[in-house]
Image (cartoon, rainbow, N blue to C red; front, top):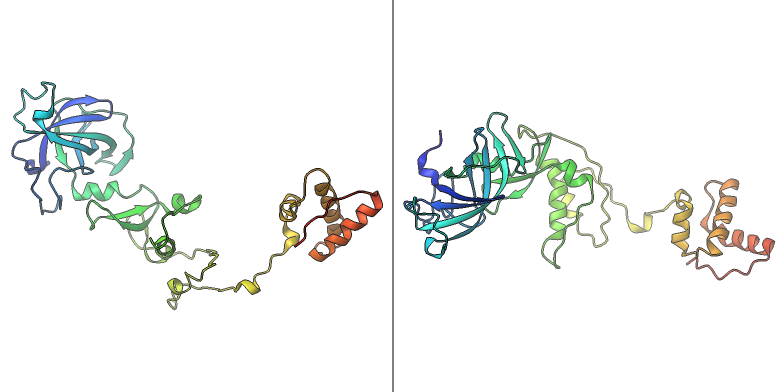
Length: 295
């Protein structure tokens, strides 16, 4: 049962995933509440609210607009004693029985449904993915005491971009995410778990050495650029063509033939052998070949 002190009003209009809410007069929209449910204005932009669906699941919405009733031209409030109106966009459905949050709307509330402020427990569920593993990546701007989690398989399993101006913390964010795999990786019940991820960092500006210097936490192997060797013979023919900038007309076929011959003689041939192999093919076939850059 929901305590009425957190009820803020009723739905008076439904337009797709947008709803209009008549705010109860005893709700002071300009008063800050300091309780376990909300630590901010009772009703403000970006805050979340919910109502019950006919199947008793909770449908959650995000407040997008708050204004005085006098600005409302339609007579929707004649049966409601309210001075303020709020608009919310429906974003998710929560199932108490399964303790599961589904982002997306396939069921809608009904007119006159009561609207409540989202509780701390629901906020926590809202900011945590329903996944086997959870990586804590920060805190909510709604309430700094609410941690935000991400599914590490989704976050790191594909391309991830971190953008910002110089000095805004891009490198710190990258370091924090990687550190989190050792410090803040949790199972679905939010118990800490230990993993040994293998990560390669190309640290061109020497920014990450100190971030992973804690003894015993990270097993780090630093490789200076002078000691970084590329076994070129593992490249494909297309990669050789891109490496040397060979044109598709004449250069690429000759380069391909030269590399094929060198690999047949010695799989781990020296890259310095390529020019001589090219010259040999050119002479043999009496070709006029544009100069191929090998620098």
